[in-house]
Image 1 (cartoon, rainbow, N blue to C red):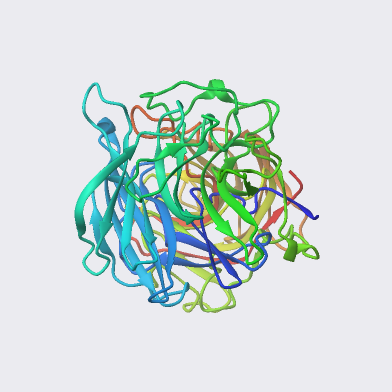
Image 2: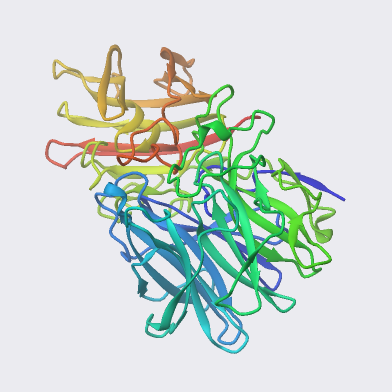
Length: 556
């Protein structure tokens, strides 16, 4: 038996939908206000995962103006063995104000996991978290949360199932309300259907997306039910196994359910996979708070748990408990596998035409008119546009933060001619919350300086007292992040010694619980990113050239 560490995918990788086709495993995860949308990871051993593509890359969705944490939610991967097609269902959450939660759900298909993916087929606007099930008789079914808005009814609503025509996206017949949850935790969502040994099994998330989160299961002889709950009356996976009654409670936080005895928190929203050797695993989301806090900068990550079937046909964790573990027993085929601890490190000199696939941009698409490696080979050129408070056209290239202890670094060349032009390296959660070490014009209009700008809950903070002259308008910048605090260093040439810019800055607020999301909700559930970017609120004519971007993780 070989034991491996969770998470298997670090940083923002929530709502994992796992799928095996042949000897290949795939996981799709949510991306919210980030583009390209829907991350797809690949593995051949369930242990080592790499990001290979995104599914929505050509304007299928417009995320400009998206408020945290709306956007692209809960993608679900499936494979139709009759047509040999991959399918991906997802929700575009457009509004969360007033707890209306307006979302449109779509499906795309492809012959290969790397695409090209079809044009989206509209499915429904009944709720969110859609999943497709392809039955052996050739019929297709859609399961989803029907969002409840009526006063006096159990929120967030019913899990519903309907037959669907995947050619048109149309619902065949009626929706069938099957459950509001299989335990007393409430907040049922993310329904996924599996067929095993004569039963249809419905795997759902419950308890909200916070510290009471969990994975629940029910089963039925017929796809529309009736579904009987797991006989334990509790989630089959959770970080907080004590009994909880919270039916009708829409709270996603449940901070009182924080488990001080577990390094893994918020375990929930799972999906099921079977190996070729008939071993079973659930991929689920999880979080790792900063020590001594309930703040989660890395957002919700992906973990794996080994599962077994009981003699009476119920799924349970391999150790017989329902407490999510920080380690898992690997499959038999992984006995000789080594878990790669450097997979999340980034070393790029921008010598290729296409930047590293891990680069993402908030709210807008990456297009050659504002970011490219062709105008100056060997550099990533970013043309400055809106300020970073913008949810329309910020010029940002970012990678997921994947550790609570790491260093990011870049070489930057920039010649500002106006005080509203900047370029640099930073930390980013959303348009209201970021930290930015940047080159800009000196206040007197003469020369270039490096200084620190910050956004906290929508407030702009200018650390102008720390400004340092940069005579050649070129600099190496380095950020060192350690458990919610960041230090900044710079050097003017590669031969110089690194110099500090200020002391240590508290950036714990750059976390799911520390930011300001929609009214009535906890701040967010996306995650922290490292970024390089440029601003030009003058004439949109300036650009910055970046080289040697690195992110090196250390032991958490």
